[in-house]
Image 1 (spheres, rainbow, N blue to C red):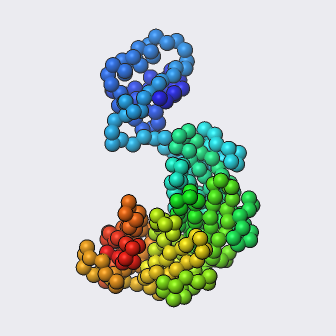
Image 2: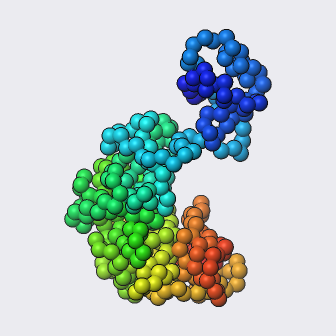
Image 3: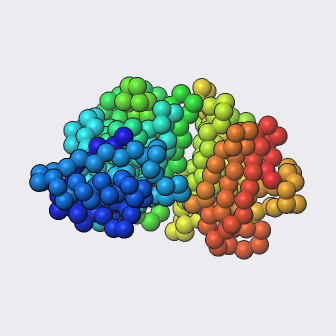
Length: 346
């Protein structure tokens, strides 16, 4: 059940036909009998405040959107107290933020572009409907506080960025790699770990400087020096074994923004990256092979902004993006599957 305070004047305006609206972007269809009782209450109750009890499970229509939080108009953030959830807390408008769902069902949001590049970390509790500002600055363009590599500290925080890659592993730990600082040609290759239980960020791998090139080493061989180069808008997956995977993205070569199709795996236990496929050059075309048939030479072309999923069998899926197909560049609509057990793309 949901308990909603509604002013008398506002309540009258909310009824249209057989619908009641909680939010300018969400409406709920109500049975006629229940709707008549609401109209009756509005005529007979002299108080300026009434409470409406609604059961989502019994009256919500299927296949409809529900507005849970936010505003239909652009609105600045309201941070509240660091680490404390409250109904008024609000991340504010932004684009190109990084987001994941935790193993506990809570939603995580980091950074993005909000009249400046942000590094704030937020948690949304899907049970209470409240936001909590967890870490980072409430001001834009905050620098990173790296601390000592491999050591968590309450003061640590990734610097402001957007379009970073993220994962949540099976232990509920949030991981973040790279991202753009907004100005053309500037991105990161740092890898961070955030542990909800300690509320600490840890700088795990990569550089604390911008625009670092990749150190590819030898394919399929992990070393302490092997590391992806700086990038943003890369695709990412976490597998059932706890490894983190990353494909492509966009980076800088000289004065040009270029696309990547290198494929990487990170093992959190060893803290090592492995270059597992794709090219160590830029703007590479894809090798498609026969549709529906996996093959050693198959590889998606260089791209950024792709959509990624992991299925129940542990396969990694990739769709579209902006980059290169077999012969030319542009927006893409190809769907790919990578099978970790065989190490092959389809």
